[in-house]
Image 1: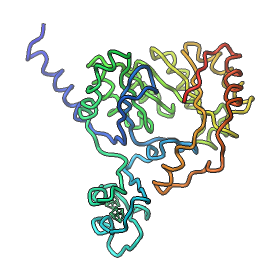
Image 2 (image 1 turned 60 degrees about the vertical axis):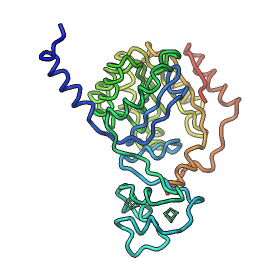
Image 3 (image 1 turned 90 degrees about the vertical axis):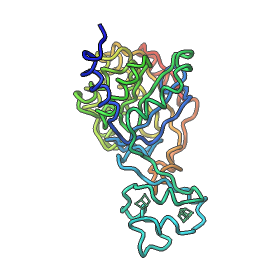
Image 4 (image 1 turned 30 degrees about the horizontal axis):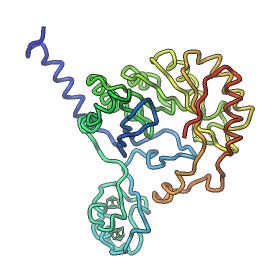
Length: 318
Ligand code: SF4
Ligand code: SF4
Protein backbone atom coordinates (compact mmCIF):
# COMPACT_ATOMS: atom_id res chain seq x y z
CA UNK A 1 0.00 0.00 0.00
CA UNK A 2 1.20 3.55 -0.77
CA UNK A 3 2.56 5.59 2.12
CA UNK A 4 4.87 8.58 2.28
CA UNK A 5 7.32 6.49 4.28
CA UNK A 6 7.55 3.55 1.90
CA UNK A 7 7.64 5.79 -1.17
CA UNK A 8 10.51 7.94 0.08
CA UNK A 9 13.49 5.94 -1.26
CA UNK A 10 11.71 5.59 -4.59
CA UNK A 11 11.01 9.34 -4.74
CA UNK A 12 14.66 10.12 -3.94
CA UNK A 13 15.88 7.88 -6.75
CA UNK A 14 13.24 9.36 -9.06
CA UNK A 15 14.27 12.93 -8.27
CA UNK A 16 17.99 12.24 -8.49
CA UNK A 17 17.64 10.73 -11.94
CA UNK A 18 15.49 13.64 -13.13
CA UNK A 19 18.09 16.29 -12.26
CA UNK A 20 20.86 14.49 -14.15
CA UNK A 21 22.16 16.68 -16.97
CA UNK A 22 23.50 15.98 -20.43
CA UNK A 23 24.30 17.83 -23.65
CA UNK A 24 21.29 18.14 -25.97
CA UNK A 25 21.63 19.91 -29.31
CA UNK A 26 18.06 19.85 -30.54
CA UNK A 27 14.51 18.85 -29.63
CA UNK A 28 12.08 18.53 -32.54
CA UNK A 29 8.36 18.15 -31.91
CA UNK A 30 5.75 16.76 -34.33
CA UNK A 31 8.20 14.53 -36.21
CA UNK A 32 6.66 11.74 -38.27
CA UNK A 33 9.77 9.66 -38.86
CA UNK A 34 12.25 7.86 -36.58
CA UNK A 35 9.54 5.65 -35.11
CA UNK A 36 5.75 5.31 -35.24
CA UNK A 37 3.14 8.08 -35.12
CA UNK A 38 3.81 11.65 -34.06
CA UNK A 39 7.04 11.86 -32.08
CA UNK A 40 9.34 14.21 -30.23
CA UNK A 41 12.95 13.71 -31.30
CA UNK A 42 15.62 14.50 -28.71
CA UNK A 43 19.13 14.77 -30.13
CA UNK A 44 22.04 14.11 -27.77
CA UNK A 45 25.49 15.40 -28.61
CA UNK A 46 28.55 13.18 -29.04
CA UNK A 47 29.20 10.22 -31.32
CA UNK A 48 32.03 7.67 -31.62
CA UNK A 49 31.65 7.68 -35.43
CA UNK A 50 32.56 10.36 -37.96
CA UNK A 51 30.46 9.26 -40.95
CA UNK A 52 31.44 11.17 -44.07
CA UNK A 53 27.78 11.66 -45.06
CA UNK A 54 26.59 12.68 -41.56
CA UNK A 55 23.42 14.78 -41.83
CA UNK A 56 23.91 16.07 -38.27
CA UNK A 57 27.60 17.02 -38.16
CA UNK A 58 26.87 19.16 -35.09
CA UNK A 59 26.14 15.91 -33.26
CA UNK A 60 29.62 14.40 -33.52
CA UNK A 61 31.59 16.43 -30.98
CA UNK A 62 30.23 16.16 -27.45
CA UNK A 63 31.23 19.75 -26.66
CA UNK A 64 28.87 22.63 -27.50
CA UNK A 65 29.80 24.28 -30.81
CA UNK A 66 28.99 27.49 -32.64
CA UNK A 67 26.92 27.35 -35.83
CA UNK A 68 27.68 30.47 -37.84
CA UNK A 69 25.28 31.93 -40.44
CA UNK A 70 27.77 34.02 -42.37
CA UNK A 71 25.12 35.57 -44.62
CA UNK A 72 23.45 37.18 -41.58
CA UNK A 73 26.67 38.62 -40.10
CA UNK A 74 26.86 42.44 -40.17
CA UNK A 75 30.49 42.48 -38.95
CA UNK A 76 29.70 44.55 -35.87
CA UNK A 77 32.36 42.72 -33.85
CA UNK A 78 30.14 42.22 -30.78
CA UNK A 79 30.94 38.51 -30.66
CA UNK A 80 34.70 39.11 -30.61
CA UNK A 81 34.42 41.83 -27.96
CA UNK A 82 32.40 39.55 -25.69
CA UNK A 83 34.39 36.38 -26.19
CA UNK A 84 36.91 35.54 -23.43
CA UNK A 85 39.39 34.68 -26.20
CA UNK A 86 38.56 37.60 -28.48
CA UNK A 87 41.23 40.07 -27.39
CA UNK A 88 43.31 41.30 -30.31
CA UNK A 89 41.26 39.40 -32.87
CA UNK A 90 39.90 41.23 -35.89
CA UNK A 91 37.60 39.62 -38.42
CA UNK A 92 38.63 36.19 -37.14
CA UNK A 93 36.13 34.39 -34.95
CA UNK A 94 37.54 32.61 -31.88
CA UNK A 95 35.45 29.51 -32.56
CA UNK A 96 37.40 29.04 -35.80
CA UNK A 97 40.74 28.97 -33.94
CA UNK A 98 39.94 25.94 -31.79
CA UNK A 99 39.72 28.09 -28.65
CA UNK A 100 35.96 28.06 -28.19
CA UNK A 101 34.58 26.57 -24.98
CA UNK A 102 30.97 26.91 -26.09
CA UNK A 103 30.13 29.41 -23.35
CA UNK A 104 27.52 31.01 -25.63
CA UNK A 105 28.30 34.66 -24.72
CA UNK A 106 28.80 35.61 -28.37
CA UNK A 107 25.41 34.09 -29.24
CA UNK A 108 23.68 36.26 -26.64
CA UNK A 109 25.41 39.39 -27.96
CA UNK A 110 24.79 38.79 -31.66
CA UNK A 111 21.76 40.91 -32.54
CA UNK A 112 21.88 39.77 -36.15
CA UNK A 113 21.23 36.19 -34.96
CA UNK A 114 24.19 35.02 -37.02
CA UNK A 115 25.38 32.67 -34.29
CA UNK A 116 23.71 29.70 -32.71
CA UNK A 117 24.94 27.34 -30.03
CA UNK A 118 24.63 23.64 -30.84
CA UNK A 119 24.59 21.83 -27.53
CA UNK A 120 23.30 22.97 -24.18
CA UNK A 121 23.52 21.37 -20.78
CA UNK A 122 19.96 20.19 -20.15
CA UNK A 123 18.38 18.35 -17.22
CA UNK A 124 16.33 15.17 -17.60
CA UNK A 125 13.23 16.89 -16.19
CA UNK A 126 13.61 19.73 -18.72
CA UNK A 127 13.70 17.19 -21.56
CA UNK A 128 10.70 15.33 -20.16
CA UNK A 129 8.69 18.56 -19.73
CA UNK A 130 9.17 19.22 -23.44
CA UNK A 131 8.32 15.64 -24.40
CA UNK A 132 5.17 15.54 -22.26
CA UNK A 133 3.69 18.61 -23.99
CA UNK A 134 2.55 16.36 -26.85
CA UNK A 135 1.19 13.44 -24.88
CA UNK A 136 -2.24 13.81 -26.47
CA UNK A 137 -0.74 13.53 -29.97
CA UNK A 138 1.22 10.41 -29.01
CA UNK A 139 -1.94 8.81 -27.66
CA UNK A 140 -3.91 9.56 -30.82
CA UNK A 141 -1.18 8.57 -33.29
CA UNK A 142 0.67 5.78 -31.47
CA UNK A 143 3.73 8.02 -31.27
CA UNK A 144 6.17 8.89 -28.50
CA UNK A 145 9.75 9.85 -27.78
CA UNK A 146 12.79 9.03 -29.93
CA UNK A 147 16.30 9.59 -28.61
CA UNK A 148 18.89 10.11 -31.30
CA UNK A 149 22.00 12.13 -31.84
CA UNK A 150 24.81 11.64 -31.99
CA UNK A 151 24.85 8.37 -30.17
CA UNK A 152 22.51 8.24 -27.16
CA UNK A 153 24.64 5.64 -25.35
CA UNK A 154 27.56 8.11 -25.42
CA UNK A 155 25.70 9.75 -22.49
CA UNK A 156 24.31 6.48 -21.20
CA UNK A 157 23.16 7.51 -17.70
CA UNK A 158 21.48 10.67 -18.99
CA UNK A 159 19.80 8.83 -21.88
CA UNK A 160 18.67 6.01 -19.60
CA UNK A 161 17.12 8.47 -17.15
CA UNK A 162 15.16 10.16 -19.97
CA UNK A 163 13.88 6.83 -21.29
CA UNK A 164 12.99 5.62 -17.81
CA UNK A 165 11.16 8.87 -17.06
CA UNK A 166 9.21 8.64 -20.31
CA UNK A 167 8.26 5.03 -19.61
CA UNK A 168 7.03 6.02 -16.14
CA UNK A 169 4.75 8.49 -17.92
CA UNK A 170 3.55 5.67 -20.24
CA UNK A 171 5.19 7.27 -23.29
CA UNK A 172 6.39 4.94 -26.09
CA UNK A 173 10.20 5.07 -26.31
CA UNK A 174 12.54 4.58 -29.26
CA UNK A 175 16.27 5.10 -29.68
CA UNK A 176 18.48 5.31 -32.72
CA UNK A 177 21.96 3.86 -32.26
CA UNK A 178 25.06 3.51 -34.41
CA UNK A 179 25.78 0.35 -32.42
CA UNK A 180 29.23 1.40 -31.21
CA UNK A 181 29.09 1.10 -27.43
CA UNK A 182 30.06 -1.45 -24.80
CA UNK A 183 27.09 -3.84 -24.64
CA UNK A 184 26.72 -3.09 -20.90
CA UNK A 185 26.09 0.62 -21.67
CA UNK A 186 23.79 -0.01 -24.61
CA UNK A 187 21.78 -2.53 -22.60
CA UNK A 188 21.09 0.11 -19.93
CA UNK A 189 19.16 2.10 -22.54
CA UNK A 190 17.52 -0.91 -24.16
CA UNK A 191 15.99 -1.98 -20.85
CA UNK A 192 13.73 1.10 -21.17
CA UNK A 193 13.25 1.07 -24.96
CA UNK A 194 10.21 -0.13 -26.91
CA UNK A 195 11.64 0.29 -30.41
CA UNK A 196 15.29 0.13 -31.43
CA UNK A 197 16.45 1.75 -34.68
CA UNK A 198 19.86 0.18 -35.29
CA UNK A 199 22.15 1.60 -38.00
CA UNK A 200 24.43 -0.59 -40.10
CA UNK A 201 26.57 0.82 -42.89
CA UNK A 202 28.88 -1.80 -44.34
CA UNK A 203 29.62 -5.52 -43.94
CA UNK A 204 33.32 -5.10 -44.79
CA UNK A 205 35.05 -3.78 -41.67
CA UNK A 206 37.76 -1.94 -43.65
CA UNK A 207 35.15 -0.15 -45.74
CA UNK A 208 33.19 0.56 -42.57
CA UNK A 209 36.25 2.19 -41.06
CA UNK A 210 36.91 4.12 -44.26
CA UNK A 211 33.42 5.65 -44.18
CA UNK A 212 32.90 6.10 -40.45
CA UNK A 213 36.30 5.99 -38.75
CA UNK A 214 35.44 2.74 -36.91
CA UNK A 215 35.37 -0.96 -37.91
CA UNK A 216 32.13 -2.93 -37.75
CA UNK A 217 32.95 -5.83 -35.37
CA UNK A 218 31.35 -4.35 -32.24
CA UNK A 219 28.35 -3.18 -34.30
CA UNK A 220 27.63 -6.65 -35.69
CA UNK A 221 28.01 -8.19 -32.24
CA UNK A 222 25.71 -5.59 -30.64
CA UNK A 223 23.15 -6.08 -33.43
CA UNK A 224 23.05 -9.83 -32.67
CA UNK A 225 22.63 -9.19 -28.93
CA UNK A 226 20.16 -6.31 -29.31
CA UNK A 227 17.74 -8.11 -31.61
CA UNK A 228 17.30 -10.80 -28.95
CA UNK A 229 16.94 -8.26 -26.15
CA UNK A 230 14.45 -5.64 -27.38
CA UNK A 231 10.75 -5.87 -28.10
CA UNK A 232 11.18 -4.55 -31.63
CA UNK A 233 14.19 -3.70 -33.78
CA UNK A 234 14.42 -2.06 -37.21
CA UNK A 235 17.75 -2.06 -39.04
CA UNK A 236 18.54 1.19 -40.86
CA UNK A 237 20.97 1.27 -43.75
CA UNK A 238 22.04 4.67 -45.11
CA UNK A 239 22.46 4.03 -48.83
CA UNK A 240 25.57 5.93 -49.91
CA UNK A 241 26.56 6.17 -53.60
CA UNK A 242 29.94 4.65 -54.47
CA UNK A 243 30.28 3.38 -50.91
CA UNK A 244 27.80 0.71 -49.83
CA UNK A 245 25.21 0.35 -52.61
CA UNK A 246 27.19 -2.23 -54.61
CA UNK A 247 25.49 -5.61 -55.03
CA UNK A 248 28.26 -7.46 -53.16
CA UNK A 249 27.72 -5.46 -49.97
CA UNK A 250 23.94 -5.64 -50.30
CA UNK A 251 24.04 -9.44 -50.69
CA UNK A 252 26.34 -9.69 -47.64
CA UNK A 253 23.94 -7.50 -45.67
CA UNK A 254 20.95 -9.58 -46.78
CA UNK A 255 22.66 -12.80 -45.80
CA UNK A 256 23.75 -11.46 -42.37
CA UNK A 257 20.28 -10.15 -41.55
CA UNK A 258 18.51 -13.30 -42.70
CA UNK A 259 20.83 -15.69 -40.86
CA UNK A 260 21.74 -13.76 -37.72
CA UNK A 261 18.96 -11.26 -37.00
CA UNK A 262 15.93 -13.51 -37.26
CA UNK A 263 13.76 -11.44 -34.90
CA UNK A 264 14.29 -8.26 -36.94
CA UNK A 265 11.03 -6.53 -37.84
CA UNK A 266 12.14 -4.63 -40.94
CA UNK A 267 14.99 -3.03 -42.88
CA UNK A 268 14.77 0.69 -43.69
CA UNK A 269 16.86 2.06 -46.55
CA UNK A 270 17.83 5.71 -46.12
CA UNK A 271 19.01 7.06 -49.50
CA UNK A 272 21.85 9.58 -49.32
CA UNK A 273 21.09 13.30 -49.32
CA UNK A 274 23.55 16.15 -48.94
CA UNK A 275 21.87 18.04 -46.09
CA UNK A 276 25.07 17.67 -44.03
CA UNK A 277 27.02 19.79 -46.50
CA UNK A 278 25.62 23.21 -45.58
CA UNK A 279 25.60 22.31 -41.88
CA UNK A 280 29.27 21.31 -42.05
CA UNK A 281 30.11 24.63 -43.65
CA UNK A 282 28.33 26.54 -40.88
CA UNK A 283 30.40 24.60 -38.33
CA UNK A 284 33.62 25.34 -40.19
CA UNK A 285 34.07 21.64 -41.03
CA UNK A 286 34.98 20.03 -44.34
CA UNK A 287 32.32 17.92 -46.08
CA UNK A 288 34.11 14.99 -47.73
CA UNK A 289 31.26 13.99 -50.11
CA UNK A 290 30.67 17.36 -51.77
CA UNK A 291 31.12 15.85 -55.27
CA UNK A 292 28.83 12.87 -54.67
CA UNK A 293 25.47 12.85 -56.50
CA UNK A 294 22.24 11.47 -55.06
CA UNK A 295 21.18 7.95 -56.07
CA UNK A 296 18.67 7.51 -58.89
CA UNK A 297 15.27 5.95 -58.23
CA UNK A 298 16.41 2.85 -60.17
CA UNK A 299 19.51 2.40 -57.98
CA UNK A 300 17.40 2.64 -54.82
CA UNK A 301 14.85 0.11 -56.11
CA UNK A 302 17.67 -2.24 -57.14
CA UNK A 303 19.08 -2.17 -53.59
CA UNK A 304 15.62 -2.87 -52.18
CA UNK A 305 15.10 -5.84 -54.51
CA UNK A 306 18.43 -7.41 -53.52
CA UNK A 307 17.52 -7.26 -49.82
CA UNK A 308 13.99 -8.51 -50.51
CA UNK A 309 15.47 -11.53 -52.29
CA UNK A 310 16.55 -12.68 -48.78
CA UNK A 311 12.92 -12.66 -47.65
CA UNK A 312 13.31 -9.38 -45.75
CA UNK A 313 10.67 -6.70 -45.31
CA UNK A 314 12.27 -3.53 -46.74
CA UNK A 315 11.02 0.05 -46.65
CA UNK A 316 12.53 3.07 -48.41
CA UNK A 317 12.59 6.05 -46.04
CA UNK A 318 12.85 9.72 -46.93
S1 SF4 B 1 28.04 39.69 -33.29
FE1 SF4 B 1 26.97 38.59 -34.94
S2 SF4 B 1 26.71 40.14 -36.53
FE2 SF4 B 1 28.27 40.95 -35.12
S3 SF4 B 1 30.23 40.28 -36.02
FE3 SF4 B 1 29.61 38.71 -34.55
S4 SF4 B 1 28.51 37.18 -35.78
FE4 SF4 B 1 28.62 39.06 -37.00
S1 SF4 C 1 30.92 30.42 -27.46
FE1 SF4 C 1 32.15 31.58 -25.96
S2 SF4 C 1 34.26 30.89 -26.32
FE2 SF4 C 1 33.06 30.28 -28.12
S3 SF4 C 1 33.33 31.95 -29.61
FE3 SF4 C 1 31.45 32.36 -28.44
S4 SF4 C 1 32.09 33.68 -26.73
FE4 SF4 C 1 33.95 32.75 -27.59
